[in-house]
Amino acid sequence: MAKTSFFEKNETVRVLNSIGDSIFICDTSFNIAWFNEQARALLESIIDYLPVDSPSDLIGKSIHDFHKNPIHQTTILLHQLPYQSTITLFDKFAANIVISEYKDEHEEKQGYILVWRDVTEKQKEMDENRKLIDEYSNAILPTVLDNAILIPLIGTLTVRRSEKLIGNVLDYCAKTNTDYVLIDFSGLTNLSDRSANTVFETMTKSLKLMGIHVVYVGITSRIVKWIIDLDLDSSVPTFATFRQGIHDVMKSEGFILKKIDDK
Image (cartoon, rainbow, N blue to C red):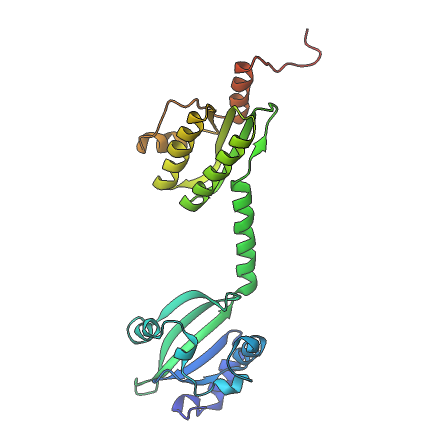
């Protein structure tokens, strides 16, 4: 451990060890000078991914040895502190990090402090939720009519999701006897200009070229505003609810819904 005034007080070390986060200290040459007990436990858990046999072997090593772009890292340390980010290590471990300078009692820089808060499990949960949202957002649901399907749009429709959606829908329709596609906007919370263009223009026009009728349902005042502001195709039949939309499609196909006991 580097001998600096920062570490001469045992109380300082005890405080750093009592903090729940992993803390790393580097000197002004970017060499690892010290880490607390939580950081040691973290390093032991990922030791198989490190080019050392034990956490203690990291003392004195340059942090540049563990970074794909040392120049970028140096720029941050010299010019962009304090710095905060979420990183992924070895494509497996996720963490929120905060990097700051530490100075002595004369306000002279002695090195850098990195606080590492492990969020691997939280990141896994977020990834699973994102995966679940993607699955729901790309769902193709059957309706009471064999030749009609429902596409519910959920959450924020990004360009990536909209492009994936259009590919799935066009492939499905090409392989089935689909005549009607009802796109439900009721679960949509946000829509970018590019993703709107993909859904309203690219997918709608592609389906029309395939001879498929497109119906927009779940149209709220906010969706109407998007359509007007983006100058999108307003010729597509629109309905406030899925129920209204499917009733119209059934009527076009010669079906009506009525109670069994109705004469």
